Length: 115
Image (cartoon, rainbow, N blue to C red; front, side, top):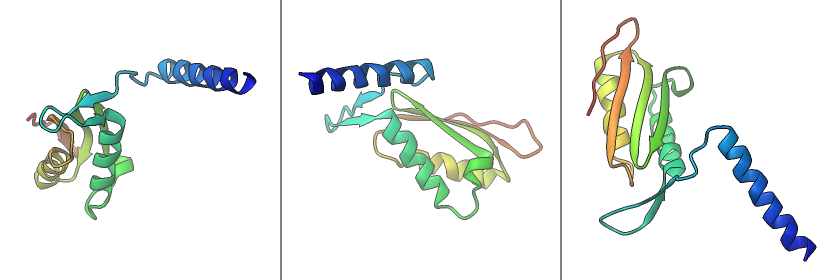
């Protein structure tokens, strides 16, 4: 009984911390075509990893990725328009992504593109 109570309390504390830090608790998305559950957290991690694999991107300094209900938003700055388009294409290619909002700006510019 103590173990079960400990598990329940641990889950409740974890949910409270996630909520307090602003992590959306409705992170689960059902893919309409396959019926598979794809989480926003998993999508964000996959997009970040795919972008990080590109030699031209400095992920931690330039691109911030967030996902809500399968819609990925890219923010930050990149060196040129080709990098901005490539980041959008990379994000679009990740399983579970329904739409990409590409709010990346060119370094030293205020240019944006939404898809």
